[in-house]
Image (cartoon, helix red, strand yellow):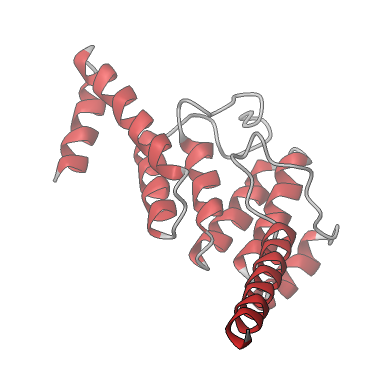
Length: 173
């Protein structure tokens, strides 16, 4: 009889602990699937100068939110700086976002108009570097993008693109 009561109490504790863990997990704000699929940023609308003054005390996820806000407001240069800073603080999603900004498959001339931004063309070498950093920072969603970019480069090299071949040669080393 004591064993049944003990077993019932342990079961209740395990179930309650699991439920609490699930609730906490669901409350965490997971990083978006990609830059283009990101939900509207919830970051406070600080002026650029105010943000720069406070950035030292922010973690990567908070900086990422400010990057999303700038990207969604049509300012990819400031978004890039925020994502790069967040990535250097270990935020894998931000490194993935910078990779997407450079990736020929996701580069959008509409987002990166030369009249509005320093970005004027994709850069596969930098995209690979940022995807690699995202993977190193634990962002599993960067691996398929990295692999897709390698296939793109292999196709370009097979078509006679010497620059793509040189990049592939460097990646293989």
